[in-house]
Length: 66
Image (cartoon, rainbow, N blue to C red; front, side):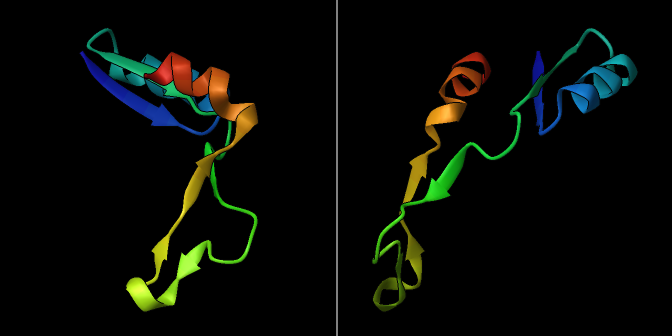
């Protein structure tokens, strides 16, 4: 089985109708992670490494995807 993740539930339904039964198309319902909301979320001294956190509103959708 191949899993495809798209942003919108409507897009997931449409794409799933084209791909058929060998695919599972899931919706993330938007962004699932954000940069942390404080200084230091982007570290220019370390190749502009970014510090991410999971958006709390996305937990349910991430569990369904995982």
